[in-house]
Length: 143
Image 1 (cartoon, rainbow, N blue to C red):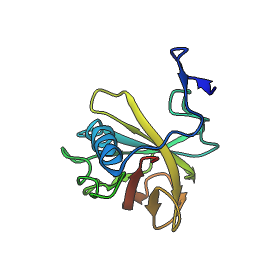
Image 2 (tube, one colour):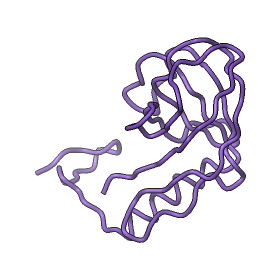
Image 3 (tube, one colour):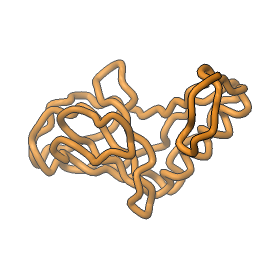
């Protein structure tokens, strides 16, 4: 019939959610980031956000007290509010990030780039002591 989820219950192979559900899910995930941090790393992004972080931690940035603006009415995409800049702790090529809540728990992972990525930087080549500032960060929920 379908596949089993983590609890062993059968579910559809191709579930779709409404715009309202995507908005609610996006807003809930983004709220978990309030006052949290973003770890920008080098190397290969793990298969999922439950896996241990890989690569070198290049810089840690801090989310605002309200990390994201509310998702749009038509679905699951939200833009981050202002993110504080910081100096890089290591030299390397930024390739992925891990968003964490204020308690340090992982919320979600995403890609880093200069144009087409979840988190946009002016350059992905980071140097120890160099200032790192985020141009934009967008979270997108699947519908």
